[in-house]
Image (cartoon, rainbow over all chains, first blue to last red; front, side, top):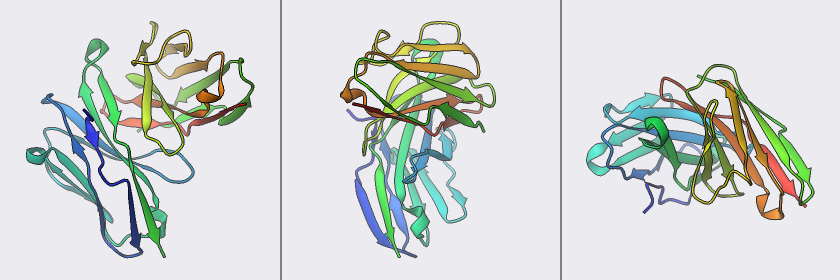
Amino acid sequence: AQKVTQAQTEISVVEKEDVTLDCVYETRDTTYYLFWYKQPPSGELVFLIRRNSFDEQNEISGRYSWNFQKSTSSFNFTITASQVVDSAVYFCALSEQGGTGGSYIPTFGRGTSLIVHP
Amino acid sequence: SAVISQKPSRDICQRGTSLTIQCQVDSQVTMMFWYRQQPGQSLTLIATANQGSEATYESGFVIDKFPISRPNLTFSTLTVSNMSPEDSSIYLCSGWTDTYEQYFGPGTRLTVT
């Protein structure tokens, strides 16, 4: 079973629209970390946010906001007033404690391609 | 945060040859990972690079094909051995910091002809 599900393969919006990217995760661990990354056409993965499992406070950073809900195992990402520069593939990732020495092994979702039209 | 660089940024190689990719982090990281990303796909973890010991490989990846070294806390190499066209991909290095953040290098675009 997929541990990180990004059900939206591609989203297309017009500039200035708000858009929400969904992320649903699955874990039995009580301690884990959730991430969002942006991968623009240049290919480099840009770290956007990290959330730990004990911090359910929503976060806002400029036009970006994140809604973490443990009750529904979701960590959704909203871009307000989208811009063409937001066009990219966005990945949600989960790090659970496991592996050698209790290290956190990251697992990525399939990604959501966001296309913002002018 | 951590800034990660990779060399080479891209390469075109002939089948049967090997390529070593270098990954340098500007600060100490607790964990280093190597990923592969096929065009239009998500990231697949190849292995965790352990300092001073053998890497821990994920299912489907073996040391003979992808030998990894990590001689210190800021440097690692991944070798893609006996390459075939199926190895054409982007290879990404990442570092996990002691503040539980994961950063990525810019990737190495490998094409095998």
